[in-house]
Amino acid sequence: MPSRPSSGTACPDRPLSVAVIGAGYWGPNLARNFHASPDWTLAAICDLDTDRAARLAQGVGQVPVTSSVASLLQDPGLDAVAIATPARTHHALATAALAAGKNVLVEKPLADSLAGGEEMVRLAGSSGLVLMADHTYCYTPAVLKIRDLIAQGELGEILFIDSVRINLGLIQPDVDVFWDLAPHDLSILDFVLPGGLRPVRVSAHGSDPLGAGTACVGHLVIELEAGAMAHIHVNWLSPTKIRQLVIGGSRRTLVWDDLNPQQRLSIYDRGVNLARTAGLEERSQSQVSYRLGDTWSPALPEHEALAAMVTEFAASIRAGRPALTSGSAGVRVLAVLEAATLSQASGSSVPLRPTLELESAS
Ligand SMILES: NC(=O)c1ccc[n+]([C@@H]2O[C@H](COP(=O)([O-])OP(=O)(O)OC[C@H]3O[C@@H](n4cnc5c(N)ncnc54)[C@H](O)[C@@H]3O)[C@@H](O)[C@H]2O)c1
Image 1: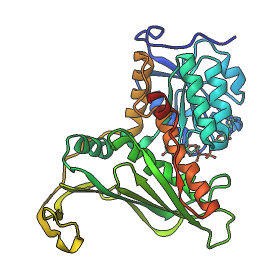
Image 2: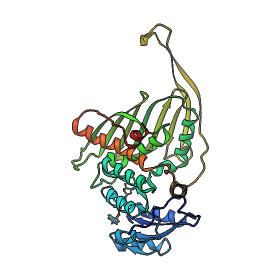
Image 3: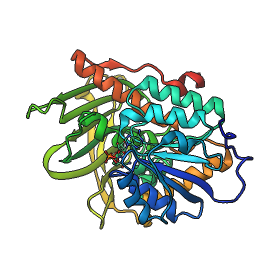
Image 4: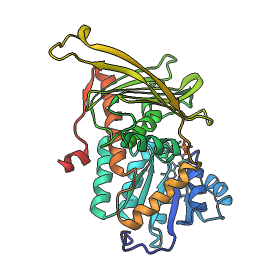
């Protein structure tokens, strides 16, 4: 018997109860933050490997452990589950949890297919439950600041975006480098761009120079609605680690270097001005000038992204509203990832069809 769907009115001010499913690499980070949060009571850890679950439980209040998702979902006192298992399992686990009346937080990527993600969003919507994607970077002080700066018009019109996420990474058995790493870049773009990520076309080039059986190096080019272009480079084979995002605007250009804690964000008042002479259309007759102004670095508050993320999960459940990084945001990311896979297979660029939210908004 499914428990009652949680909603704003169904959730008083008591801490909400959550179980973490998946005690591998990332699950412990979620468990630690739920355990530390005044908004949550961590109720259980679930993993097919109960020894692993038990080891994690020791550090987070000796909560009960189980290997059975089905028995977990029968607990009527459980408000939510957080799913930190491999991507191929997200759809089945999330739909079972939603069908049991639980609010659901899912790790990136939301699902291993666009259709699966869309079904999860529909099910959450029809059940009045929150489906949230853990797009962790969106809760970092740097990304929250980038979002504010763009919303306030500090950068002007977005002209280009360049994101590099390369390091020596674990070659994943079930996903290529696009599905493993690009969800971070795509979810950040979806979060900071006004109106979200609305690509027109996507083309992807992946390579597997070691013969690992999957793309380990990937380049993704996304044509955005307003004519700007975003390029994302993801790579598991690079001995140097780079985490850099450049957003070029008509007024200013922003550089986020996530590996430079002294100066993560830099704003450059430098760029190209192009003034067209009335009546003259040729590029050679445009007046090009260069702006060489100051560079500054905004102060950023210190907080752990996952702490803010679990707070937002509770707030969205209590208010009965979509989370800042909603299931629909997860679906917009999946739309690009699926187009990237199609583009690699066909060798050509792929036009994007509207995702669920865009369809319902029209
Ligand atoms: N937000 C981030 O920054 C971030 C970082 C790393 C990983 N992730 C995501 O977290 C998820 C998990 O990645 P990971 O690296 O922790 O994987 P992992 O392989 O280290 O751990 C997965 C765990 O899930 C368990 N599991 C698998 N199927 C299960 C099931 N049906 N029921 C219960 N337990 C099950 C496994 O036994 C394992 O312990 C992935 O979606 C990954 O993309 C997110």
